[in-house]
Length: 498
Image (cartoon, rainbow, N blue to C red):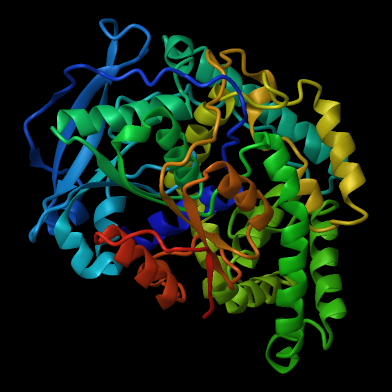
């Protein structure tokens, strides 16, 4: 997995999450005889280097009509080389993230445990090498003003949301396809992959949205779970928009922690000698962007983009230096991007990020939302919440209360209620204390057979951090490997410290 791909996954995972709302349990419709193509060479060079082979599994578009229209799910496999336990599927998050190479990417952290599983990566329906949905090309963007206002930027976000909805829904037969973009259907596709491979059960590792996907699978197919590990999950009682709003306070606390770190290094970064001074510098930066967004190497850092960039970095403690470098670069005039800012600009320009954000829309708007039937329909609801949030959350409040997806304009709504969460299937949960721990505790209580590993780190994603260039948490890596390797769930919840 390339550095850019890892950054793309992290941005999507940090910014988006699915809400698992209480509702009527859905029938765990399964495919009787799913078909799989012959395994062959993968198109991706890194998968080929990893020794993977690739294939396609044909599944129903609509599981209520199993004999009807079908689509294909792209899968990869690195076969077990030791005493085989079964198959391990994995999902890197999103929604909107592709995952064909994710399972093989985990090998470095799984170590010897990887030899016991066929590692199965897959691209969720409508994404990547699975049967894709493509949207119409965006129209020409209006010329962006050099001087602007927060309200003007909000109006532009509404225009962009309407345009995304129009060009995705109105192209070809997308409306028919998008009605079946749901987390429950991705879970059903996972079970079809299991059946196509002739396995009685599957094991799974999912992070961020992938954790929510794993929780849904445990409800739809409880008897087919072998080992289930979910990392950085969501509150099953919150809607998608509520989850965004809930993230504002933890982000502001993370900013305070980073500001104290940067203040202790004032001689290097020159952002302030106290945490309050550093925070004030960041606040001036984002408020200045609401009047005159900086344009750096051709990228316009409007207030929402700038806040998203800051959010991506502040969530991870090991990114303190990168965040300080980015802020230092941006407060200088003229702006001369250093390596960290340049990497983020490359990401913002990348087609992978654009594809992931559009793919996220398919599932965020395809699943039930706020309240049980949609996100707020009135755009002014977002604006009022943005204004109210500024007093307590001046840096991130306007971002997490804004319209993060075009679901208000999406008229291919959910065709089924979301999956009710609550059973005793054994699950190992991981959650960083700084990362929506309250929501994870709600899920933990509903997954009565789960054990919770709480990580004393500032992060989104606990397991396998070293493989992504982060700071590994050996205690967590060992716990996951011991469980996946055939061990029992821990007898009680526990905490891991760096």
